[in-house]
Image (cartoon, rainbow, N blue to C red):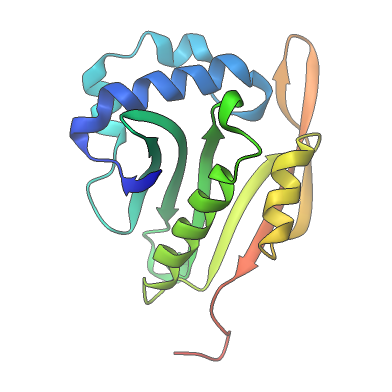
Length: 172
């Protein structure tokens, strides 16, 4: 297993796992498979950030991309102390093997290395217990619930917002 920051060259791998994630877990993402399946490979290439404060980590087993997690730091001055974890996904056959822990740990370590970032934020569907347990094991705490955040096939899904303080409030 190796974890690396995805680059534009990884767009084909990224497209494949992203579409798989949207197909396998449609209730867990704000985007639908049909919305991204029509996107060109160039659009997926554009979605892969090229800077250190915004990135997508990928976990590879040999040449197979088996897990992803996206990181986005706020750009506005008053919000730069915050960053978001988004679009985390591990292929079903690779779950319960520590891949999610590897990705999340690497993402947190990279976030700690960015001077301005003090807090990490994420949203998770309230009924996604394995993901919630993973985040709680890293010290994330729930701070709110958005009722009816997603609607799919006449069913609503609530989103739980979680945060992790990675630097002391008093540290400069």
